[in-house]
Amino acid sequence: MTETFQFTLKATDGGARLGEVSMPRGAIRTPAFMPVGTVGTVKAMYLDQVRETGADIILGNTYHLMLRPGAERVGRLGGLHKLIRWEHPILTDSGGFQVMSLSGLRKLDEQGVTFKSHVDGSLHHMSPERSIEIQGLLGSDIQMQLDECVALPAEPKEIERAMELSLRWAERCRVAFGEQGGKAMFGIVQGGDQPDLRIRSAEGLKQLDLKGYAIGGLAVGEPQDVMLKMLEETLPVLPTTKPRYLMGVGTPDDILKSVARGIDMFDCVMPTRSGRHGLAFTRRGRINIRNARHAEDMRPLDEESRCPAARDYSRAYLHHLVRSDEALGGMLLSWNNLSYYQDLMKGIRLAIAEGRFAEFYAETQAMWARGDLDPI
Image 1: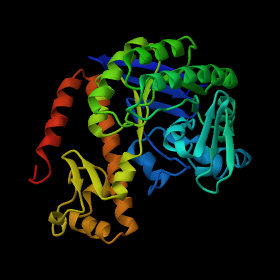
Image 2: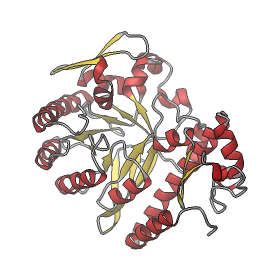
Image 3: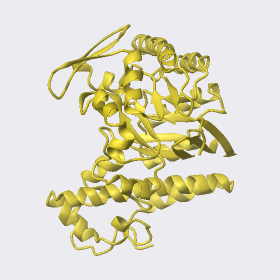
Image 4: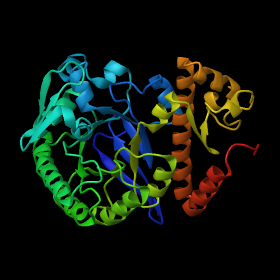
């Protein structure tokens, strides 16, 4: 552990990077996947389980925690770490995604955004300064700037307007955050699917000399090839000595291809959301456990997995649970999925360290393509 926020780049293999973020609450091995705990819970999981899968850090959401239980209440109770019994790093998203996802329930201007609560209809104003204040009350270790995320496709002028607003908000967040020793504030590169805007955003944020930089506004409606092109345009502009975080991404394939281009950190609701809907991620690819072919299949999801949910329960039983809408089905599949994501990240890190990331990439893709019908 360290008393300051530090990022160490340990090795590279092509575009892929192996590193470590050191913080007072612990180290984050990168490339890292951050399970999403939007309202202080990773859905269908005990946080002890989340830690056992290999997670070094989880994500919480400023907007949702502002509404309930309330930032001031969390602060009075000793902060989010104490409240949820998670002693390790937490990153909080600033509420910028909800500017897009809840566009029908908010009003936006230069000063910030006013949300109409989706819970009870109450009004809540969030300025860049208030977003940082809320994240401080929550006690998160990595805090994100407030930004405006735009769904794609969108008109270039609208994308440019949101990008410029996000840059101005980044400066205000930087001032509000100040210097907090072992904590960090990350800026968020916006610019939609416009390479020139992405570059302008990255250059503007770089001038603020932040602790880390996120790529936002992707995986919001654009094809994967567009997302990857935006990474290729943006990443060369960002400092090589700072962590790079691709927000809200994604599938195992998205992660593998983004690591190859130089991304260090990821988050996504996909592992747990998919698990609750009967979809399992495995080294053999995706398995829809709802399918009838699993009804009498006594094989586990993966007999070689270290995760009990994948190794010790039959597909027939998981099929029964999911088709019967039993909560245990979603719990087991979420456990399997988060374990698989963390095993994928562990494999990526080892491959980079050993200088064989290209081989790992090809082997992983080939195994996904082979599928799960036949024993391995």
